[in-house]
Image (cartoon, rainbow, N blue to C red):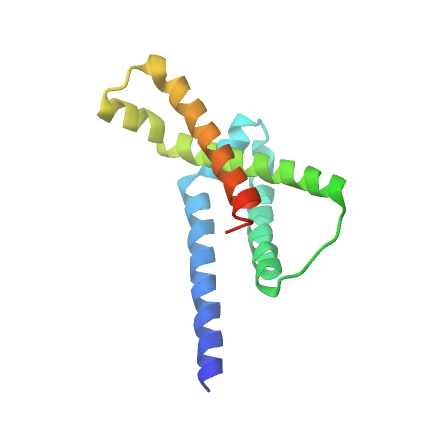
Length: 139
């Protein structure tokens, strides 16, 4: 009985968190904005469906610890695609929420320095990913 309660609790918690993340991305308008910038507005519903399916399959692979042996070349290609996706997603979310302009106005940072702030954020993300994946071995 205790295990059944834990299974139900874990599943419902995971579904709630996943639904929250997906609804945040859809309701805030990150996907439509990314499609607008990429001039692919006809595919917005496709992007949303792929995002949900990717979250579901990614969660299942993560929970079940499924190992897929694709080789080094496929790993590099998938890693680059994943990095591009995360970069677009984070930059789209930042743009939709007007994070950088809002922070620069509140901190009274001249617009001349904004490009250096963005570059430092990118470099920090790359170094943090490198440390997490190669030195700490995934946390």
